[in-house]
Image (cartoon, rainbow, N blue to C red; front, side, top):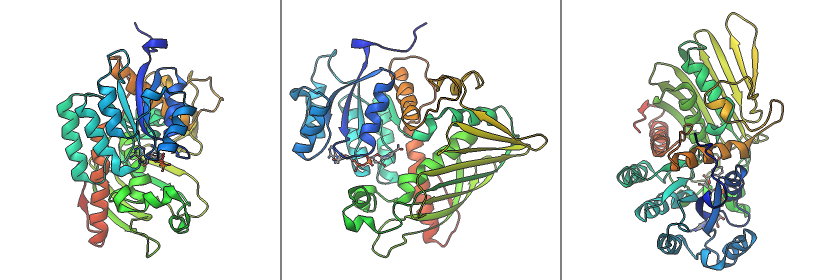
Amino acid sequence: MSTGYPTGANRVRMAMIGGGPGSFIGPVHRKAAALDGLVSLCAGAFSPDPERNRETSLQLGLPPDRIHEDYEALLAREADRPAPERPEFVAIVTPNHLHAPIAAAALARGFAVLCEKPLARNLAEARDLQRAVESSGAAFAVTYTYLGYPLVHEARSIIASGGIGAIRRVVVNYTQGWLAQPVERHGNRQAAWRTSPETAGVGGALGDIGVHAQSLAEFVTGSDIAEVSADIRATFPERRLDDDGAMLLRFADGARGTLIASQICAGDENRLDLRVYGERGALHWTQESPNHLWHRAIDGPARLITANPDLLSDGGARAMTRLPGGHPEGYIEAFANLYRAFVLSLRGEEAPFMPGVREGVRSMAFIEAAIASSRANGAWQPVTG
Ligand SMILES: NC(=O)c1ccc[n+]([C@@H]2O[C@H](COP(=O)([O-])OP(=O)(O)OC[C@H]3O[C@@H](n4cnc5c(N)ncnc54)[C@H](O)[C@@H]3O)[C@@H](O)[C@H]2O)c1
């Protein structure tokens, strides 16, 4: 049986679009892609600014003929390369409004795609992209980071095997404080594009972090959110997209839930927190302490599950750790797990779950349903993704 670890010339070739100097997630992708030695970066268009594009390309050691002035040029020239050089997939790490057009253009050139969330600016665009993915037959992944953590998979396994009984209540909160002031008016570039519908799409905090909370809740419980009732707002009159929202949830399996997605919670850093309550107990996982999962049974002492490969379930969770118990792993490793799943699926190997276009569309449906509900004073809206 193959080990699933391509080496040297066997590494999967990646072209990257976005991720220039000072950007957040592009460098995280590159570190994650490099972590297991599975992927080699072979081409890029990292920034629309030629100097910044060149700066990143030189830092990364790319030859001049693999540095492209824009994504159209990259896709056209790289598609014409002979097979041993041609990128096997394109990683899209630009602001949101470019995800769908770049992904569609990459699919049309025959590339597999690994795309950042949210999938598109709105649900209609996401559905168009879903059709393009399905008709292309190409592999397509969406990087919901938090679905790459071992203990998130452990929680899913416990629930799937009936470990806490039927799910009754889900409490998921994703709160940050970095938009507690109107920083987009004072030169914060990342805040500027995230608070503009032209570049962020229809959702503000919903698109930026709400989709992580929604996808985490759906993944761990194994149940889709069927309906949402929302109260969302922009805290500052000049801010054009939501930065603070609370939602009631009805899951397809009958569970009820609440979800908060807010970026104005001053003092919070990256507080993603999930509690799932079943008939016989509860699970609690929090992203800022990702190697701990609490299991509280109704009839016994609380149990702390740690990210110890010797003690985790045989399935997905154990294979997602790289170190013995007690050696903390975190954000980059979770991202690397997504990369590994994607690469294994590209190689036709057995791969852990990798979120794809379906999950991307569901998130866009969730955002639009929440916005429609809030506009209708909290009226329940179906989430039809
Ligand atoms: N999965 C996660 O946990 C996670 C975390 C952060 C951000 N994201 C997502 O990643 C994306 C990027 O976010 P960020 O925080 O890195 O943004 P950023 O502003 O820090 O970086 C965006 C980069 O894209 C480049 N870019 C813009 N237009 C381009 C174009 N036409 N061609 C090539 N490059 C272009 C910019 O120059 C910049 O280098 C967003 O969609 C965001 O939602 C996901």
